[in-house]
Amino acid sequence: IFQDLTEIVALEREVRLKERMAALGEMAAGMAHELRNPLASIVGSVQVLGGDVRLPGEHEDLMEIILRESQRLDQAIRDFLVFARPGPFSAERTDLVRLINDSVRILRNSREFRPGHQLVTRFSAPEVHCEIDVNRAKQVFWNLATNALKAMPGGGTLTIRVEPSGQGQVLIVFADEGIGMNEQQLDRYFQPFQGGFNDGTGLGAAIVYRIVQEHKGRVHVRSAEGHGTEVSVTLPVVVGSAAPAGSPSRQTRAENRPLQTARS
Ligand SMILES: Nc1ncnc2c1ncn2[C@@H]1O[C@H](COP(=O)(O)OP(=O)(O)O)[C@@H](O)[C@H]1O
Ligand SMILES: [Mg+2]
Image (tube, rainbow, N blue to C red; front, top):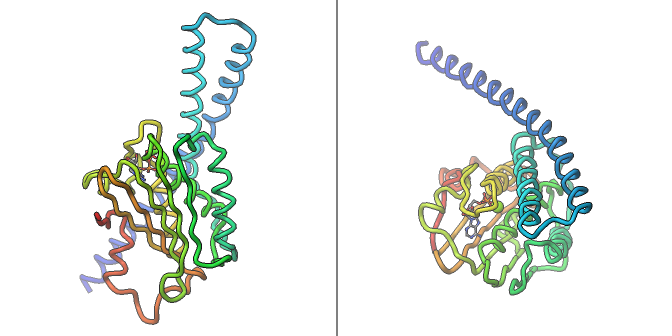
């Protein structure tokens, strides 16, 4: 009986903590939302001013700093909003090949894509269907692909592979030839607000982790410092159907934890 009581107390405590976290998240998200409007006004006004007056060289640089830093702030707030208030999850049958090809096209035309960068895709079939939340899947693509490009400032190839992986699973791999990560960086990879790229918020990988979890999938990172990084995402073809008969093994659950990493 004593055991039962403590369990109830622990459960109550957990529920209360969850409620508090949710309330805090809501408040923070609300605030982040409020910050975006004045920020947009500031950027708009500065842009108008910049177009009106001819500034001496040095002041033009300052103007650019204002715009660049405002954009960075806006991106950080947007990342935070996605993290704190993800919105309803809605999975639908989607062709991954098409989704990735579309995303690659956008990426090629983005400012993250620099001369010297190459994007290669390898698909095991002309169409690979699975049940995913399309907006979230795009987010995963964007976060992993831009990380890979940022890790190759001097150029290099990002290879994206899609192939079947065991029963009812699909594997998506993002492999780059970039700077890679050391053990410490790899350990922190999924942790929010831990970032080594100087223009990031450190939320990208945490968002990827959360989204993959929502899809009942797994994400695994391997990296070799100075050589490159490989991020593998395994998704069930149909959400909720991938678990083999019986309960998942300890091993499988351990793989779900954020800090599970391996080095090549
Ligand atoms: N492909 C990669 N190669 C090397 N390092 C990476 C790669 N992807 C992520 N990282 C490291 O992990 C950190 C966390 O990534 P992320 O959560 O996306 O944050 P950021 O906002 O910095 O991009 C990055 O700052 C970087 O140090
Ligand atoms: Mg990132």
